[in-house]
Length: 174
Image (tube, rainbow, N blue to C red):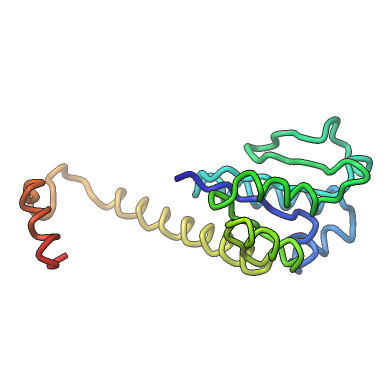
């Protein structure tokens, strides 16, 4: 089952110390920084991601829905707010959606529709941790590849047959 992450954009930006400082300088810089962060996360975890922002009139984007760096970006149209758009998406995707917001009205509505929810600060911590883990794991693998000069395999050359693995699993040994 594919996960669709739906993010309350300004809520996440304003809950983040780093992103909010960029947002205070220029709202477009804050949005761009969020999209960069999400694009790097998407390279690690290829989930479908939609970010919803309030008001298309505040945007330099030409339509209410665009794809930027593989991230779907939506701007609500007046009189609707981003919360309304997020609620519509939560109603449509139900249990296939993860709603990222600290707005309790949005969270309660999404949970009532069967969507999973996570607060904005917790989500930011998780994606930053995933990015740092991926970077550290990548450097360890590169160093290991540089050290190995032969092509001999290490460890056992054969695994149990599918039937034997199934029997072992049934027996509760795995």
